[in-house]
Length: 284
Image 1 (tube, rainbow, N blue to C red):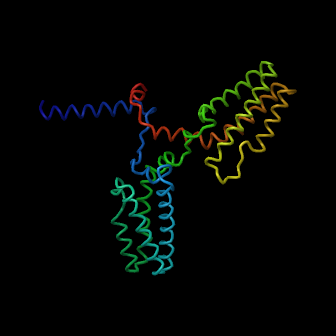
Image 2: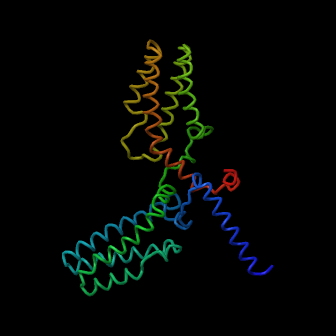
Image 3: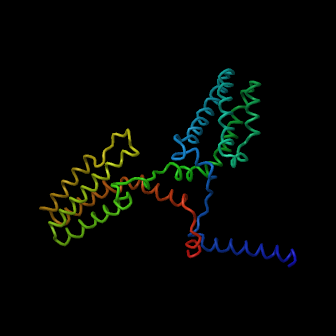
């Protein structure tokens, strides 16, 4: 095969791939995943969120550099600029794949401006470095936070024989069981289902301390306990409408509030953490 034919064939394959992606643009979303080496600087691979704390240092140091340049304080400006340069270059050591993304030249110009007391040049150079930071944040910040800072429930067990996921499925079944049998007038079964639900909620609450070790929040909290009592009363003497209202309130308090914070982040993190299923992608 001639080289010209080979090149034309490769171009056609690329065009076909682009065309397929464009046709399915409503189903396909391209994202940039960070290098795998970044994981070592986040929990659980690391005891501390090292990368995150380095970001905090950089933000604080940039503010200090600008502040002392504006106030023309050469001594403190050099102190903070040296620290800023150190932590900026540390990113290349921690994740070598991102070294090319750092604006080393502008950082060198900043250090020179600080050494020569060219206070008027510092804000401009900081702004250029900040723009460089923002370009990476646009590509990676949301994805990194989702991958490495979202909660991970995979290792949590309710009992040695019951996983967290299985327990959550059981709670959902119990909520729906109450709704079904209460509408159909099965009072005793609805009350026993509520009792099982309450027990399951209490068991779930015991696992919250795995992450919320120093939190004052309780699960179930006082509002949930009061709603459970109201639901029990409604199942005994209330109308179907009263029962539905109380059950709906409990579902929001016991399920939706936590899901809005934890389940959303957990589900999205799994999308990025798991290997792509090419068969499913082709089927879509």
